[in-house]
Image 1: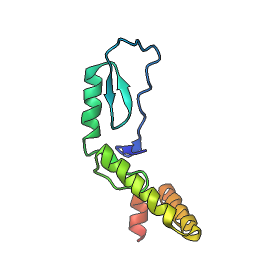
Image 2 (image 1 turned 180 degrees about the vertical axis):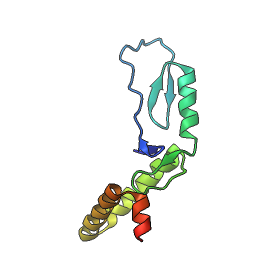
Image 3 (image 1 turned 135 degrees about the horizontal axis):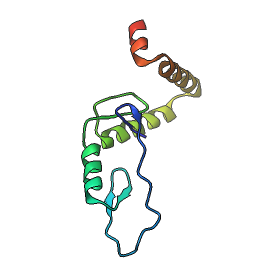
Length: 108
């Protein structure tokens, strides 16, 4: 799931008391449903803003769609790696998250 301003993105839950005749707004990018047009419009603007980060690669300054596509490509790349490299890559990724990216850059 793409990160919003480097934090986990939490989708709006689907309203439970939906009326079949009620007018709803569907955000195709996040697959969320909104009753209020203003909330829907704000979500669309947010999705098209350059505030998203790919969770897997850490690439910042992306739109929601670009971050989601980046994650998909990273997952595909990871599936093509031999098991030994996967373990090493996952270990390094976990270590970098624990240490912090800024600290890691200083060490390199």
